[in-house]
Length: 473
Image 1 (cartoon, rainbow, N blue to C red):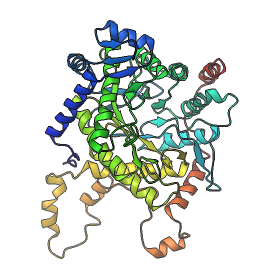
Image 2 (image 1 turned 135 degrees about the vertical axis):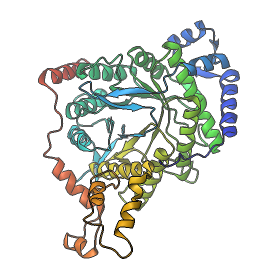
Image 3 (image 1 turned 120 degrees about the vertical axis):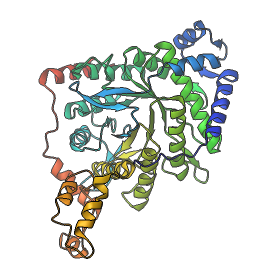
């Protein structure tokens, strides 16, 4: 059977957080800094104070909205072919997005990111079986129009890979331009079929900015799935306790989900979270701490309570090097996310609290993802896998199992995961091959990927993308 899902909250504790959330939304409310959305919510009968811009969500309104959210939805690739189902209980893994710097493969030094970095990144993602979704890793710095930087990243991704796209911006004009770019290359109907997913965030505590709300309205109107991802920072923009952090995230997330459903009942949305705790000694925001990892489990439980597809971030680390701390923080955060049953987990390739990317980190994270998925898949127990008859046939101190048909059959199955980077075998063999650590092996593999072509677009589609960026103001 499969690994049992990790849980950290009891049913009573989930209901306690839920009740506190309803009270906050109904009696405290959320600030809506967009006149169009404010008027819309007021016209729909919600209590809305023009002077403070505070809107209060009634329990009935919240219940009605949550009941209209699809519990699962299909996702398609660039060619309009079915990729996977979100919400089916099987975690999908994505490359990360919105970092700033790149760790150079040749020097190991951190530097500004480039379009070429994103192009190679996308070609590698296309070849990795355990990367299901591509985030736009960075806003490349070597572009002629810095305001369109994210669009150049989008262009580089969709010109080099067919896989579904995950993107995020707080600027409505950029969000709309990305949707136009996805529409220009997608072989299906983007209003009905999910090719890209837009992530949009509230501003803690309990506030929604003007541009983000504009982007929510545009995204819902265009039929693009929406991940509502609050980012409260424990002890800074929400209570320092983990239960308080969970409750703040829950209140902000539900307010976003409700607005999306009021705009269009049945809109594809995700209950998302990117937990941030605070090191009060330095003021540093942390994404790889033990506390953020345990919250990823709680987030999946809350999403399950509301029957909404869930999204979280992992594998995460706060260290600035490809080292042991990076490895244990990333492994724990990713394992907890998968084992808790989060539907979409995005951040492969990132480290340094999400500020830096490297091609090598992407390869190592994909291997972590494959290993974690294998552990989560559990053990298949049946008459054939128990092999009772074979054990009796070979008998005590019998011949080897190496040449048995049973062994050969299962050797070629998914019973065992075979990593592409991990060092295995005797020390002598490792030393003979140069005593290379996992990072050096990843560097060599990146060099081999540089000659790959990816999945290029046709000339007409490329021209459409270039035109959208050219006309972007």
